[in-house]
Amino acid sequence: MNKPISVSTLNVQIKSLLETTFIQVYVEGEISNITHHSSGHIYFSIKDESSTLSCVMFKGNTKYLKFQLENGLKVVITGNITVYAPRGNYQLLCNKIEPSGQGALAFAFEQLKNKLEAKGYFDGNYKQPLPKYPKKIVLVTSPTGAAIEDMKKVASHRWPLTKFILVPTLVQGEGAAFDIVNSIKYADKLACDIMIVGRGGGSIEDLWAFNEEIVANAIHEAKTPIISAVGHEIDYMISDFVADIRAATPSNAIEIALPDINEHRIYLDSLVNEYSNRMKSILFNKEQELLNMKRLFEQNSIETKFRFIQTEINLLKSSFKTDLSQKILSSQNELILLKNSMKNSFSAFLLKTQNQVDLLKSNFELNHPNKKDKNGFVQISKNNKIISLEELQIGDKIELQTPKYIASCTLNSLEQQ
Image 1 (cartoon, helix red, strand yellow):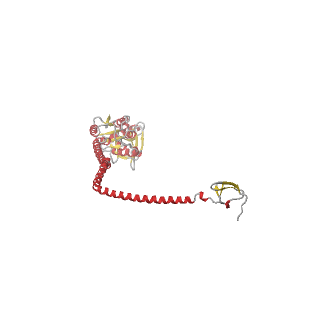
Image 2: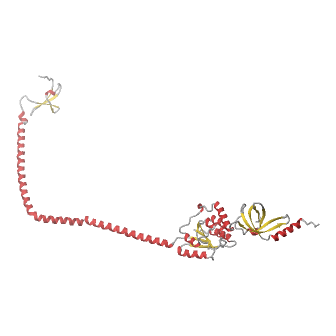
Image 3: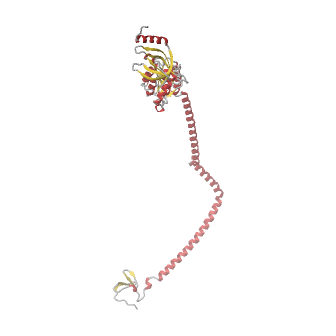
């Protein structure tokens, strides 16, 4: 009969057997019961329809994860079996985890994109407009890459009036995301009009720093309008969605940020031509107005009127000379006729007037008061007014008047015959 072994010995033998037999496994399952320990380790299980397997990923390997582990996520794990001898438990020690069916980076991209979109980072309300004529632009990029040279070249030809400030930044590799974040925060304090964050082309791994959440947060929180210019036209980064403007390339970012000096030169030339043509038109119209006013003035000037009058006078003189004799003769005849007519009329007027005077004289002589004096006849007056006897009343004071005498009396009686 064999001698029994201790539990510890059995667990050690199992540990040795499992760990030497399952040195590297490649297993697919659905994550459940995930726990992120304060130490940085991640504990979870993977399962299928029938079984569950405990898993652990230590802190040293978690830093290589490109996406967030979540319950219900189907993953493919590369690792080895390890046994915890004191408890007799075995688990899968995870070295690498990939999302099932797609690459880790692509999944991480979509995962972070959905998360930030839900937080409103892509909302147009957060987008800031770019100034039309920026005075200062800060560049957050590598000082040695091709991108900075391309941007300098485009800027020198496009709009040389703008000042550029370079913030040297690590744009790929370990620690690049943190350096980008620090550079963005520093550049945001420089009071520039525009910030361009980006780099030239490269693989998805080279560009990955611009897909990190901390970079997205820094761009979202910046007060300076930001243009994201990462890689080539076909490359889309998380920074492109969060930034105020996305540029296809770093060179395109300069084209977006700066006005085109040649277009402005053409525009200025067109303004000069338009101004010149308009001034010519105005001057021509004013000149025509002056000419019309001059002609009108000449037509109505004193000199013109004098010339017209002189012409009329000359015509009259000529006509007068021609008809002078006839007019003088005619005038003489008219004067003779007028003289005779006036003489006859005056004689008739004198005769008529003499007759009227004679008639008045005759009437005066006939009606002279001296010839009206008859015995027994007087003129009755009252209050110096001639009055008839019928108008008197008893007691009236009256005057009886002849051409030579006036008698004052009082009427004592009045009888009707």
